[in-house]
Image (cartoon, rainbow, N blue to C red):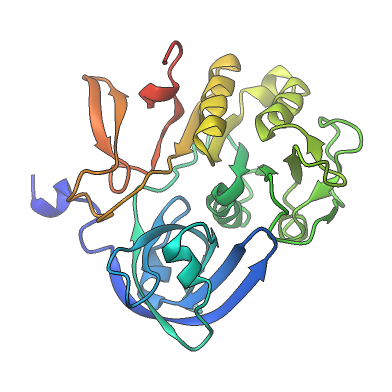
Length: 300
């Protein structure tokens, strides 16, 4: 086997001095950052991420999920929350400045064309990969994506009542992400904060309502995709088992190098040959839901 074949991401990760095109602040210390990174934008896929040097004074990069990419215009869009020194400094950066970033990194989502009802679950800063996946699926006539998004801080977009009917969800759950609604993709929002029009509970609870409303044929067409905090991913893995659905999870881990060299982000994955330690940065971040040992039935 050649070195390129054994390392499928060789030659596809780019280091760029990316110009900041826009940087929008939202409630809850959340930011949407758009940068001009044409080489990375050409190969970015839903589920991949960028490793960003937040400030010239900070040597360590931070991994940020990609929310959208436009190959023709050459931009990447990222959503992040300012929670530490690095991202707080990143929040101070302004349009016209440049950021040093590596992207796209990681194994992306791979939707199964035989299961066109793609159920996208995003929580908190796990929203970006779901939006990116919805964006890439929408030109296809084969896929019928639907998104349930959750947050315990105000959503990083203005919510509004959806114009798309979704009879399988509880009455009164009408809040949507306007961008998805404008794309013709049904979405509903969930939170424990009593936000208007949102489901009072978790996105996985909302998903159960929706799944319970499907007939047998519709159910056989569903595939789950999720990104979010660990408890949400564990609940999604349980959901996949309970409904006998295939699923793919994008894991969140602390990373130092993000290119597989330091092995600081390893997780236990169940493989056909038995348990193995895999690197989230390059072997993931996307793994089959049933393969993540921490979320397996009976795991501590």
